[in-house]
Length: 437
Ligand SMILES: [Ca+2]
Image (cartoon, rainbow, N blue to C red; front, side):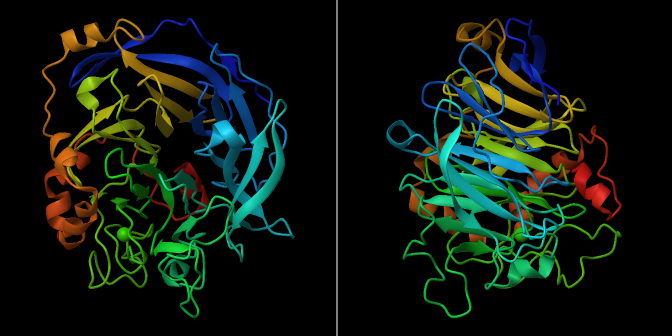
């Protein structure tokens, strides 16, 4: 087993951006397929490694041995130990939630599961599963999974279709769904399909292919998600209660064969929600965070998204729910699996691989010295953040659903195709191609 090493004190590298210089610092390396990063209230970080390890990184950079208490995970392809998030009331309950591919009793298939446990000195204690996909249909592909809590403490779990696309449309299955639960796993009474015969009450929205990023909008306080398309058609969505996000009937992507996705009727259809944004050429998006910090002021209100095959950090400027500009950073270097904004306002990234790294983007000139960043940047365009602040939360989802997909993605489409520096996604429909994502 590779052992992660802290590189505190290593010199940062200068990164030129549209808003001037930033610094990128490698904080640690040697993680094996790190997948998710979470901050605890005391500044400690938790990091998952897909083979099933959860580690704690102290404020001084010291990296723990794997913590106890992680359940058995199905480690194959995209499956393993995935997301991690502290309870919103962590200070009182010390609960940590993890999402993972859970094996079936035979050990040959996986489904998405979420467990929680109290974080003690050695790891998670009193671990209990609060959500699981049954039946388990994944051989190691399309298991999601991201977990986010909203301000009411509701737990959202973004799942995948287990590469059984039709299940994303079936309300009696949990594949290809965004799920909404109470923190203990019980179903909230106001979920959209509660009481509907033949429908799982856990479902919040459906028709999702494989949710790989989710974040609570800093102002509207509702979760945004993104998901992988097949060949093309990665999407950002604003999932609303009971709505159908289309997969596999509606997609902007093609099947890996290069032919239309079997059963697809086109890129839009009555009764199906258009994405807020899509990429004609899939970056293979992973991880997502709204930038709401102070350290990199020009980015405030932007949406940051990692790219695996696209090997980049994607920075999106928003006008309300519309993506109006895209910048790609750190292009062609590493597959970026996760992106988070720390309590210090700095941007933390995990790179995917057998020697995965923890990176931090910070103002050039050093952590906390904002003046230098400001000096080297153009005055921040406030157009990205402004409309959002003025938009009442209730209004945010409304206009979007009625927005034709072409208009939503239009201005960005060309930009999204331009950079193309990362290796193109493997066109093969094999599990190998999938795993490369
Ligand atoms: Ca869709």
